[in-house]
Image 1 (tube, one colour):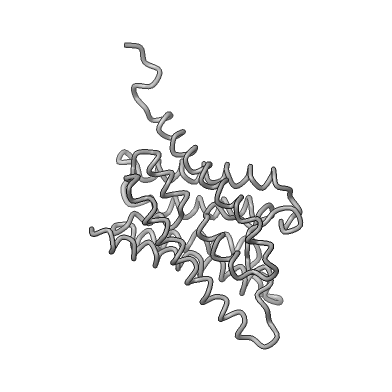
Image 2 (image 1 turned 90 degrees about the horizontal axis):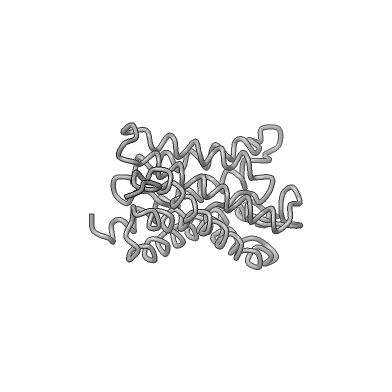
Length: 236
């Protein structure tokens, strides 16, 4: 598949992830009496990945996440020369989705963007968690995400079920970590929301939501390689 078509697929897929996941957080999570809450938001993020994995997985691999792209490259599943183009496509798709969501949110009289489902720590953590806890949860959750992705897409795994495992994994990750950081594990998602959140605080904390997921993504992919390496630990 030509690179430009794969990049377009990544942009569309990441657009859907941000619009569906962050849109559910901003518009539906706390809707009076009928709000979907943390569990609903977690499921929404999982569903965006699951649906797009079936829609564009055969075109671009459906990374939708710079940490996934870099992790797959570190894990030997993706060429390093295409990492930067993929990341650019993902960030652009995420920003376009955030812009659409911003126009929807501010289309109601008297409503401002507010925190706009941006990721944060300290005073901007939903549960008041500090920088150290935020970095740890983002790195570990992303590492486990990559571990599941590597395993579910392994040629030895049951065919056709990878999107389900990956989507449910992302749902579980959100169920665990929304109270800590509002859950990123995806620098593109974090960047798009930080650009539109009120007050500029999200841009000041954005570095963590690039650093921790990228570190975690590489670590998770390398851990999977160690676990599945048939020659590792053998003598001769």
